[in-house]
Image (cartoon, rainbow, N blue to C red; front, top):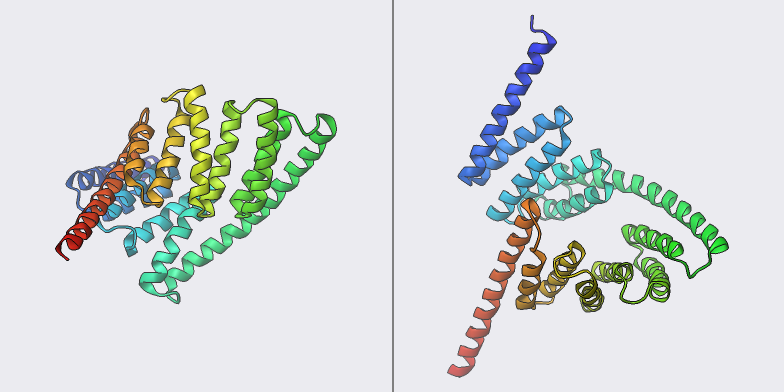
Length: 312
């Protein structure tokens, strides 16, 4: 009869074998093989409660599928759901909701809303959102109590009051109540501008939060206005290579991509990549490659249009 030690030893060998198979698949670049071996490896790690390792494996699988099949593919959506499951297990509910929300429309488009796979994903999303709502309500109650105490003891124009208002704004933003978020961030911005000065890093952070909300509202021109404002402060005060500055460049790049200004997007992505390493650097470079393709397509369409006008 196998002992517990024997079983643990066998499991370790199984994990190593699965990892080797997954590594070999990644080297081959075959998306189907990466999906098969990576999913097996991730499931094994999940059973062993090695959730960080499982998440890393699934992230690699997703990247391979995105390169090979694109976002609108059944396998791509399936891996998004698996990643969401891990985020849910680790209590990262906002990230879980984000992945469920990405996966569900793809599944509905490809399989139909009545398909059992879509129903399962929708139920998972509904369940986690109900838990989220309870969490948000408790968080808002706590922050509002803290705000009342701070207003009584230190007043409106105090850095500590601004911090609480930023926290309140962040909860509203997560809930999707963007007007309430803007109201809270606006109060915090006014305090920081008055107390700390317009050119203070914490003031710039508040300005950046305002840009985030407008981006989520798809008001890209307003978001760009705030992001560029925050960026000008951070470049001047923190320098080009500070992480807050490079993150700001990334936000600006995303907005320029959305509004079709691809050259400007690439310019800011190049600055955003400074100081990044590993997966973050790879993601930034991958996005730059995608925007470069968009720019090439844009230029080709402009050339074709010009040629057509010339021939008339």
